[in-house]
Amino acid sequence: MSDDYGGFEGVRESLDSHPMRQLVGYATAYWPRLLIGIVASFLTRFARLVPPIIVAAAIDRVIFSSGEPGLLTQAGVLPGGEIATTGAKIAFLERLVAIAAIAYLIRSVTRFGSRYLLQSTAQKVQRDLRNDTYDHLQHLSMDFFANHQTGGMMSILNSDINRLESFLNTEFRQIIRVIATVGGIAFVLWRYSPRLALIALAPVPLIGLASGLFLCWIEPRYRSIRQTVARLNTRLENNLSGAPVIKAFNRYAFERERVSKQSQTYHDEKVRALRIRRGFFSALRLLTGVVFVAILYIAGMDFITSADGEAMLSAGAFAAFFLYLRRLYSPMRRVGKSANKYQLAKSSAERVFGVLGQDPTITDPEEPHEPERVDGAVEFDDVIFSYGENDPVVRDVSLDAPAGATIGLAGATGAGKSTLLKLIPRLYDVDSGAVRVDRTDVREYRLQRLREEIAVVEQQPYLFSGTVAANIAYGDREVLADEQDDAASARTEIEAAAQAAQAHEFVRDLPDGYDTEIGERGIKLSGGQRQRIAIARALLNDPSIIIFDEATSDVDTETEELIQESLDRLIEDRTAFVIAHRLSTIRDADSIVVMDDGEISERGTHEELLATDGLYADLWHGQAEERPVSADD
Image (cartoon, rainbow, N blue to C red; front, side, top):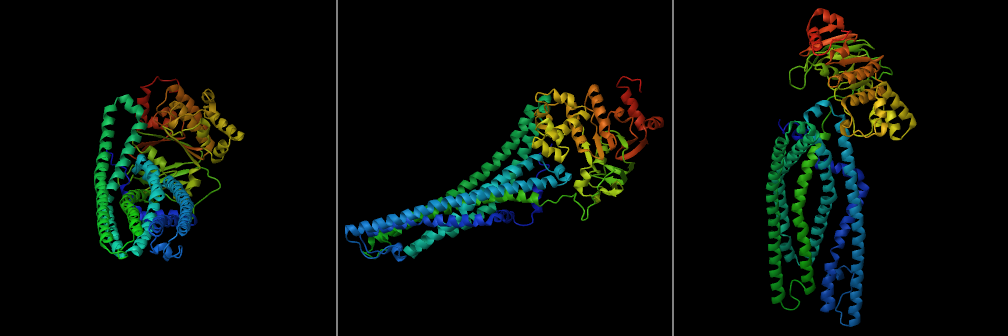
């Protein structure tokens, strides 16, 4: 079995535009709080530039008593001239302290505001993206689910969307940090010394170029890593769900080897990307270190060899310059990490918005048919259907089922019985021909209106993790809502449906009755109990058409009799299609259709088909030899 099948490599073809632009579109829905958060973030960064200027003023004006004006004096915040007396120095220092206090107050308030607003916006985007992606997945057609792995879908809904939230939460603020810090420091350094500022800022374009090249290199690696994670998740999900089979066949070593190979592939790809990434960041640190050393030497030599007042920098400016250098290169080195995070987020965004760009193949028509009443008459008219490009599974099938009739379907496994009935609720559309309900093509119905009139009870019915009552209530939207609100009327309807499905007695004997938690997929119930819960759910739906797909093939004789009683109640006054492995289930059907290799080979009542001595008769006699012959036979 290949682990590559069913991945999400192809969903990128559904992207309408750049995925990160679409992500920003989700964020701009909250533009007022986003705008305030961005402004607050810029103010935070600008407030952080004030303390080094204050240090420079304190060194020059208070400690050395020079007349060096400084940037705050040029801005009109501090008085100019030399400060000679102790009282004047104290007054000047007190003003510096007041300015520093105001700067730190602004920084604290704006930092809180920016982080709260930007992080809460990221959380809202995460919520909206997950809700929209899940809802879109639910509305995609069955062919999408047949062609894509569940583990991959879970990876998108969890890991990928969480990564986008993390990017908005962290890296978006880092982008603001780089712009505000580098821009502000560049301005201040230029005011101190244009020559030294040029040297200090020289690495900036180099870092930008290197980050761009790094992005181009790392993009395919991260795409591969995300695909590997999806395949690993799928393998783990399959193995955890298939734990009973693994235990029964003692395939621990085999599955451990398969998981180990996937884990090793993931490990190798991550380590390969990690090696290059760490080398890239180390190169950036080396580059900024070279510039720091160069400025230290040039500015230091100038300060030492220049005559009084002729140096490029005063003592205070010299100290401030290196304080700014430290702050300048920290966000610049962070550019590389942000580039790395950006590429990870872009890879995730491609998958998320690629899924959102997928269109369902089964949709409502422009003017849908929505009848007030559906009688349930079903007609198949020269139906041909195939899965994708494969050979047809159903060939030239024509069949009429009057409203209220019971149609049994028999035939070998793979004959096309289940596939034929999936065409009624439009889980798939025919390749040619037509399926009609009450003489109207199902493709003309509104999907919701059509499907609410059809109930399906499968061979292995899917039950949700939760209580018995909640699973039965799932058959009716209003009852389900009332059950969630603990309405007494809902419980009455649920119990009535359970009694009709021969389920009330065993449910009442469960530890908590209808409030018993049945576990994932109903694992705490037996196969027959799950079937009867599914029948109760279908009864509560009160459909016009019921599809019963081999419900008694995997249960014992006693359970089969109970399910048959439930089935008789379920199909009463409804159009019923009953697929049966055990032909005794359908011997009383109004008509029995025998399928062979996608075609109808025989049709008629039980007695008529036995009289023709064809495929049905062979199947019937073959089963009769496997069980005791009853008086009815």
